[in-house]
Image (cartoon, rainbow, N blue to C red; front, side, top):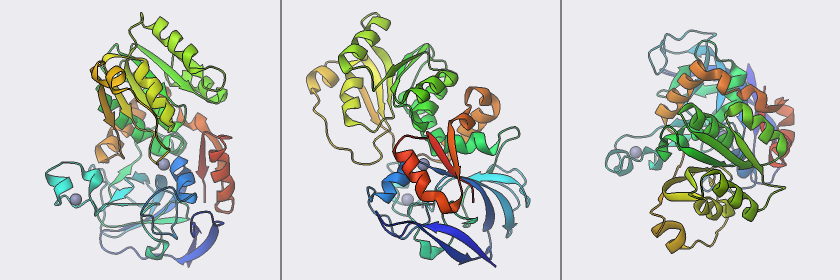
Length: 363
Ligand SMILES: [Zn+2]
Ligand SMILES: [Zn+2]
């Protein structure tokens, strides 16, 4: 018996569907039947060859949800919950962090660990079903599996996808305090998740700059109070409005989830003195922007941080928030298209051209 998967042969080349032998899970391994896998901006970047170190051809799809088809000696998930065939689960896409190298042990930055591999990104298709755009996914020994909590639907989870954890991590890294006025730059899945988690963490006010307007309308369901349409307002207008909303002081926290270098200059300009700024949207190199170190950093006494990737505790935390506060995280509403394997290219194009906020592959 074989299972079909989408293969991305190389940057810019048409996707194709290949059949793979159905894997026999070895000791500690679990085979999932894929229920859904997300399509995100990273997949678009992968197709355009904008990420370094990708071992093409690959099976894309890094965040996925599936049902346990077969488990070899795995009886519990990573949090100790019993696991049985048929259970609906997800897993941390990052695998193989060594917990022994300099980055893991001294710098405590496991997201820099050279042993780290990511499902759907850094496994070659020759390794087998290690991506979610596939009828099945083989979870290697040690992959951190989590059962979806009671009451969390697969669509609510996968509609958030990796943006859910990145948004969670971004808010955590910002040090956001209760009552803080927050500006989120970007209205994609990361921006929406960041806004929702900022709201749930007790923000005093949540502002968002983004586009297109259907995303901004949706943003209000995620706890955003005031939106600025990137397409119909200019920087000067937005700065005046934001300063007017904050007694001319600027916002306490800015969370960047836009991927546009110009957003960083704009965000620093509307941040209050001593405020906190987290850059999370520049997962690929989108270029440079002029900054004034005196005015925008030194004199402002700014806290400027980058957020790269996520780890297991972000996944656990985000799932708990989904379980308890799901109505404030209505990610099923951002799913704009469900695509079978054969239409994965359409999914990539629809995401790239902002026709949908989130596309999912349903094999
Ligand atoms: Zn390591
Ligand atoms: Zn993603």
